[in-house]
Length: 222
Image (cartoon, rainbow, N blue to C red; front, side):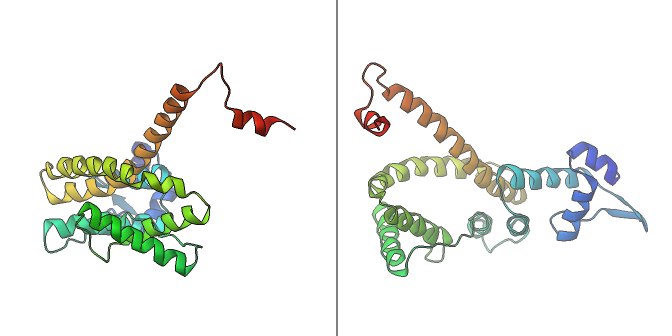
């Protein structure tokens, strides 16, 4: 198909497709003349994946490029190959908490990993990510939220086991890699949406229409 047809099939404007090609997110088409190129179903599939990562996963173009690069960068073993793809999905963030608070949070993360017997490399950036979250919660005085960390860990263990089992059923490494990338980023979005739906339900179930929460009444009083 020509680029105009690729645009129609994907819903992505031609200038955007050309931009993705220039940035290395999308492979160029097969040249049939100096000014014409042909694209195939693989291009269409990759384009849909790019839009999912950008629009639903809310990744930047640079982050999307890094994540997609992991698909074509295998390790020495299947575990290492899938691990590279999974690590590539971890967002790069800057923390504003102090060094001392971050060091204390890092120790909490190490204790959590040891307590749960998780096999996680010391270089895994998710360790730092979690430490930054913990330090930020403490800086905000939200320490009671951290009492839930093992409840969260119980839940994500079940999710992670199901994720890995599902991915390993795929027929080849390439589809496994794509599943890790798309499944992790879009799975995060799905979990966030489900959590908010569950919050709405839990709040509704906990509501007492005939007995308003006195704390809310106090805030409403002048």
